[in-house]
Length: 180
Image 1 (cartoon, rainbow, N blue to C red):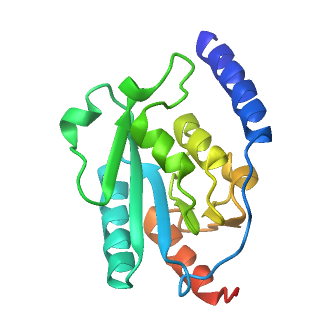
Image 2 (image 1 turned 60 degrees about the horizontal axis):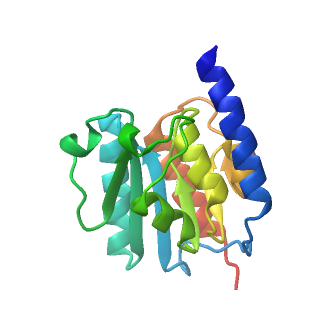
């Protein structure tokens, strides 16, 4: 009950802060995007491996990629150390209200990625906070939970609700967009 109360307060603070967030929304295709941000749940090893594959694909396509993974643990920074394209935050980087804080989080939110891809597969308040407040031009994620409100393009996964299927669909639809 206390956790639910804290999340309600955090949601109120997020809504208040989001009203002051200014961003220019512009749909952009994968071909024309240069800077891409990826947020995901790094707690799950399978999801982390899928993000690595996507990141490598985007780098091969000559994209500038930054990822931010949330590790649901107090010892997350011990499990994975940041390197080139991969940054992490864990429960040590959360306030008592589950609001993410720290340089990596602030920098990621403030970076105006042309595309922000939210690969979070379940409801995760820290990632919700970051995706909602991100100043990215075009936000993409799976439909459901917070992403319906935070993302500009959501993809419904009917049968195969895996991160691999989500990535496949995101790549497909982003290649179809030819915005100038």
